[in-house]
Amino acid sequence: MGLWDALRTALGMMPAATLDGFTMATPLEVIRQDTTQTVAELRALQPQFGSLAGRGWEWANAGFLAGGLWLVQRGTIDWRAPAGLLLSVGTLALLNDDGSSASGGPLLFHLFGGGTMLAGFFILTDPGSSARSPQSRMLGGIFTGVLVYLMRSSGGWPDGIAFAVLATNALTPVLD
Image (cartoon, rainbow, N blue to C red):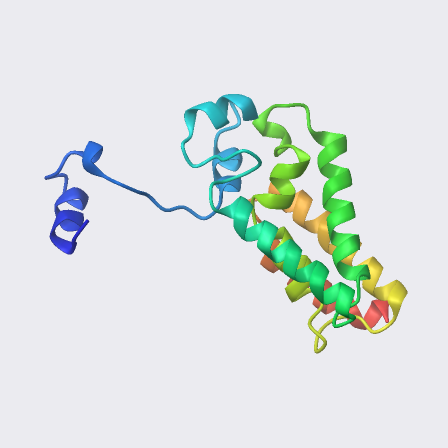
């Protein structure tokens, strides 16, 4: 779609059926905004949903997971912060998922639908702002995961990664 077609569509001069794509933050936004249907119904109605989470997001997060596990295997990053984040988000998603979109979505949707893998392996492990001791790294990951889940399920943000990481970074001196 060219610039003129985009302008004509924005001004209502072109039918919406000719659109070939659309953008959005993440599929978490759809679940956050439409709590009247089940996750299965949303998957059937919304074309941006894939098998686990959102089309494209699944593959990006699988790549972040593979790259992060490679960094852990090489000893470049410590495994504790990512493990704490993934375990806490995963546990809360498993405990609270009842199939409705009001629950925030199932486990794999939380892990592969937003910035969870990116945050766990590439943001929380930043040497300049991460905790120093092994116990502090695990606690920081758990704290971040709990905040992420709470922001996704009952907060005003569909993902909440940035705010959770900032809160954890502010707490790092206390954890150490």
